[in-house]
Length: 280
Image (tube, rainbow, N blue to C red; front, side, top):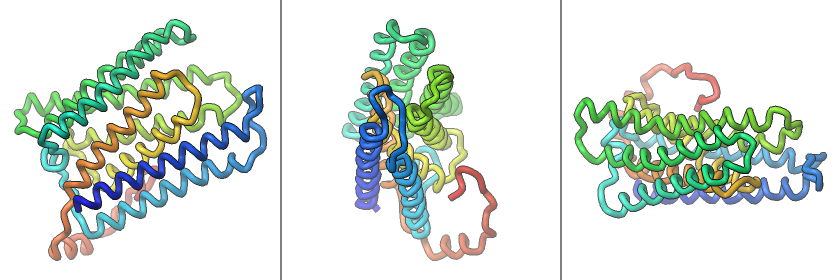
């Protein structure tokens, strides 16, 4: 199972690298000098590639969870003891905070100054809250500390919820849908990914959906880097992807093989009717 964690993480990162390449080709070949998007095969290839990756991730996760179990307890699932994990979680948090600081610094030349300052501030807060959220899983929490960990998990969700509003404001009169579509998809995916990750603190965990949105969030956060935007925003997207990659790796390391009794009990359960966008 430990080898599978590294294998799956590399698999998702590789998919994200291909996503960047495909999106970059679309930007180079489908857009003219005026920034208008014309007819191009890449307007079909890009959404097709995103759908294929989503299907492949869903299939791999379903296959994995047929023979393995993911702990649903906050500490059991996200425990990451040791200096190495501490370094990684604070590193990605520092990168996120750096992106937020750069967004605030460059907001003076943008048209939505206040909104960008709020985004930058939330990115800094998220950069602090994320390592604390993962670190809280390493110790036994009292009731007040559990409530605090819930608040820590909310910070990145608030960040990308506000980013979605910013995208609407910034592109309200933009007729070139392809200019902002990938970013909107990435923001929505990241919002759902951090929402599912926060579910461990809230005691509301659905393993298949959690792993899917974490991995799809990694893919989309990398794919969107092909677009042109300020350095601060690029860093925030990259840091968000690395946060999810770290959380995904930690969770996958906690997988254990199902016992025969667990397999039989699962097969005896009636099929759940959980349709919608998150259906796996």
